[in-house]
Amino acid sequence: MKQYKEILQNRQDAAKKLTEVIPMDKLKDEQWELIAVSHGGLELSTHIKGRLKNRIDILFLEPIMAPNNPECEVARVSETEEIVIQENLIESFEIKLDYVYGEAHRKHEEGILSNIYKFRKGRPFASMKDKVVLLIDEGSETGTKFMTALKTVLAQSPKAVYIAVPVIPSDVLETLEVFVDDIFFLHDIDDYVETSLYYKKLDKIDDETVEKILEENK
Image 1 (cartoon, one colour):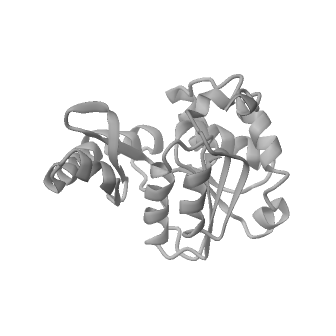
Image 2 (cartoon, helix red, strand yellow):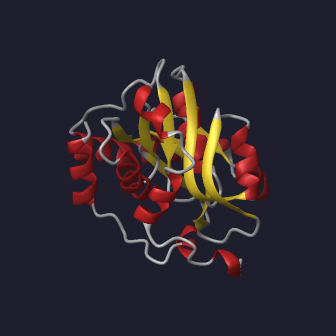
């Protein structure tokens, strides 16, 4: 783990290094859709895009936590109400699926719809049918965000789906590779701890920044 600590300066540094492994000519010529799966991924997307004209958007997701452990995520729901469940945790904690689906509906109504109106002025997530999609995040602890985004996008019949992520756990990389056309990454880490550990600086993205990025790239 020590060899990976603070291996990236910030999101801009991570994006610059990612553009060396992403086929940027294809990204430009095929007009890939840059879809962030988090606020941090959204800022990373702007640095990857640079002066290109590719469209940037964010797919809103909400975590579903264990009923008796607010720090343990057991599932995640997307704005199209696709749900990914961590079955091993559901079984270990003996959580009923009714609870998961109920929480997914509540999180969608209270969190996701609020974000759609706040950040996109009510505009729904655009269809990715026949599009080339690049899903982007600054890191990935469990892979649940990417899996939920993949389930959402693949249901819309895209032409191709890629992932760009600077740091990723080795086991998550192996899991995701099955579902995408390619994954562009800088470091796959066996004993992954948390994403912030691998950046010297990882500022919180405020709501105003999210609104500005989406407004400039709608």
